[in-house]
Image 1: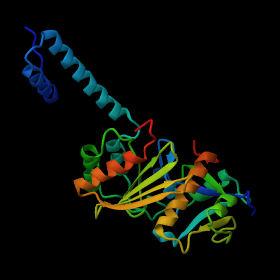
Image 2 (image 1 turned 30 degrees about the vertical axis):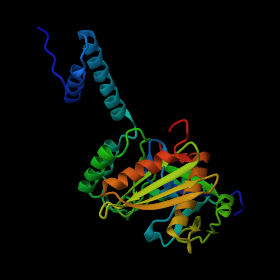
Image 3 (image 1 turned 60 degrees about the vertical axis):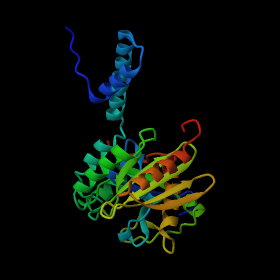
Length: 172
Length: 123
């Protein structure tokens, strides 16, 4: 007897497939294998991405006060965990990952350099969860600035939409 | 100092991720009173500037990037060679600029500096 332990997402796929009136064992197997490979491929890509959010924030959690010429405030570790989870659950996986840097005031600054000359920064205050967005085009000098409350899911949706709209067409 | 003079900026290790430097490296922090310290490249080499900088145990740098005086002029950022607290010291004066304006100019300078590349990089 062959026993297969299914992960939750594959169980859902199996249920969906079994609801169809006609399916063969081959179709079932192909569907399961396709889902499994796709899921593992995504996980591997995320973990090996040098811009992996969780890894970078864990790295920044090691900073000590005085990290910037004796003056920089170290970001709060619990707040970094919060930010890591928010990015994981609310930042669209179809968007390019940001570069992440500490700020002198104990916050985090996310940055994107897009191929169409947009330089973007999102300065996040970890205490208030307020974030300041600035997108500046180096060629046209167009500049858009917004302030969002990242404690709200709606703000993350707005962030995703705003970034998506600036992506070069071929990448959008 | 002339339009081609390179203004040397130290890069903190945390301001570098996967080869990319944050635009924060080219704007003053709130405690800097809107003055961004640089070394005058006409008076000191990038490597010697780096060595001088890390002599202070509180200061860490992975290397040196630069913008030219001309690039600062294009952004309407005055460059002041004050020679204080050491002869090669100068600063970019972001006084009387809003936070948004400072960030825009820092983005522009950061892009120019990264196009130029590292003048000195720690092994």
